[in-house]
Length: 234
Image (cartoon, rainbow, N blue to C red):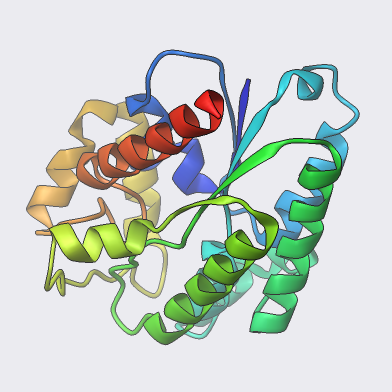
């Protein structure tokens, strides 16, 4: 069994999950909307007590986007700050040290449990004013941890930039969250139209500036599947 531990990018409620485009198999989708690195750590601790966890041989770990995204949104308006205040208990890893600390705890648990690990780097975010420098910083941390722990690495950001160079189109979620709310409702009701949102907004990589369109989801699925096949043939 392959445990896919992540946030909404893994879940695929808004936008596409890469899991949708992988080969048929036992993929356990444990993506949670809005989750942080700390939240994923706490969930993993609970999963260790579950019967199904014993069958997991590979964990695909994709986490960390919300540790940057949610504090960024809180600085945009009072609405986002109020709306996201209930997420504070998940302890946003706003600095590189804290993020690395939580990641190490996750990787230590998976190593102790004998799970092989594929770490997915943080993807491109197409939101106006987003601190991309922090995204690149976190990906350097991920790259270093993958080497240290002997984990496989899927550098989705580099792949996006290579295949869609100059993807500079940006999007805004607004100050009230109305557009974001409509996105969620419409994509739940009309999941087949997700790529339509991407095209209408001229976003090359996402449907809303954050969540994957089918291009990025298929790209990530290909790279994750390739690493899974390598690990299972070792």
